[in-house]
Image: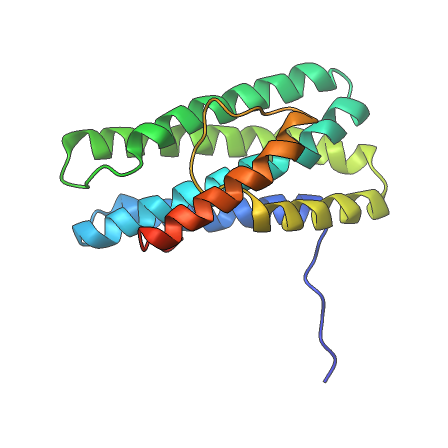
Length: 188
């Protein structure tokens, strides 16, 4: 039986990540999960968002800068949105779901991320698809998937978010985060 390789087109990879995180948000929004489950879901969402953001900053945003009209402005705006979300995640991380600030921060994060996703999916990704060749989009998708495997799993708001510093420092932060995750029995 032939195996099919996963679709590594950058646009599809990014949208798949968006849908996965929104699924976690939807479960959190029901409010029906136990406190332990809400904590696990929040930690999972944080880890996935950090990995996603790091990969976008390493590979998608440089392509935006190079390929799109006003690419620098667009990438800078998107990076600022990542920074804002990362500050919220840092404040949310480790909070107990019984803490009144937990729900407030979670609502803020969900609102910010959904706004960011809408901008990307309705404006930026279609423009990037039109500006890049199919093989380039597949190459970028492969790079994003690989970057996510070694990316940090915890927010680091002060970490560099631009080339080349992020390419150099993010894998080290990712390794340290994975060690911390293991020691704290954090499953993400």
